[in-house]
Image 1 (cartoon, rainbow, N blue to C red):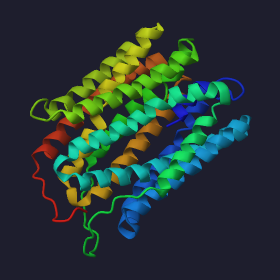
Image 2 (image 1 turned 120 degrees about the vertical axis):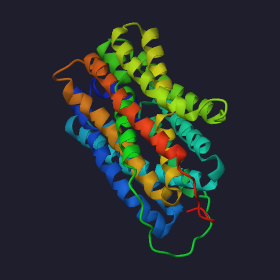
Image 3 (image 1 turned 60 degrees about the horizontal axis):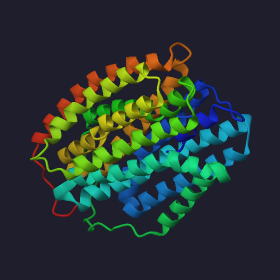
Amino acid sequence: MLLPALGAIFEQAPYRFSSAGYGLLYFPEILGAIGSSLLAGRLRRRFGEAALFRTGACANLLALACLSGAFFARGGLAYGAVLAETIFLGLGFGLSNTALNHLTAALFPEGETRAITLLNAVIGGATALSPLLLRGLGEPFGWISWPLLLALAWIILLRAPVPALPARKASAPRPWRIPFAAALAVLFYAIVEGSFGSWAAIFVSVHRALPVADGALALSLFWASMTATRLLLGAIPDRILSRRVSYLASPFGIALCFLVIPLLTGPTALVAAFAAAGVATGIYYPYTLSYALKAQPESSTEIAGLLVGALMAGEGIGSFGLGPLQELFRLGTLYRLSALWALPLLALAWHVSRSGGTRPVVRDPAPP
């Protein structure tokens, strides 16, 4: 996602978005996420996985077009273009990511947890590169160059083949139970992720008055360390390192990072602390998703869509909420208070991993 990487740019001339205005930019993302979660299962049943993915890709292209338009605008027009970008981003990410998670779960039924964790590691890796590439390309060409290159990549992906799953006999949609605990866990986790990811560059470059490059590096290393954690833990068998132990340890690391970051002022310490936050948050979402899919494998599209929607909604809340709240509290104080998210995250992880880990996994002869 490009908006966090552009946060420090949008708060400076010639855009000068306020903290409250910058936070509000993430609100349409919540609407897009809700729309995508409602549409995903229906689109997949009617048109198939390829159509679901390509619809999401088209929405991502529209988002990048709106963001590119903001480069040439100023004031309210630029702000409106970025607002439009976030709603298309929520819709596009929700649909395409739902399709990818469903395909991964169906194509690798015996190694579902590892495959989903590695998939999300790849997504996180791409996110980690954005701030660095944005800055590197922005020096000679302007920041618009990176959105345009991303748009070209999505156009290429639209032409790429999507793996076809074995056909199933036509039947009425099966009833499925909403995994409330998993959805809440993802929602609360995403608020935490949004609080770190969407405000890292601003905390370092604006609140600590350090160079923009330091803010970009802190944001990149947050996503990079999250990616590395997912790659590492996704490759380690459960018999060597218990998946449940790692899952339950994550909220403790999250709380520690929220408490430590406001105490730091130097660039090296801040960059290292945001990298540690990436490690702490790395596996919470993919593990929650995996437990939920294993509990109801016959409804993987619906559950993946619901949890991706919860992820995007939480990202929007975490990113949007910290903006207006800065009228009352400093960002460092909000970070300290955010350590309390560890309590529900731990309780929900305990419940999800207990029920999801002990429930027998029963799959149809053909993947859904």
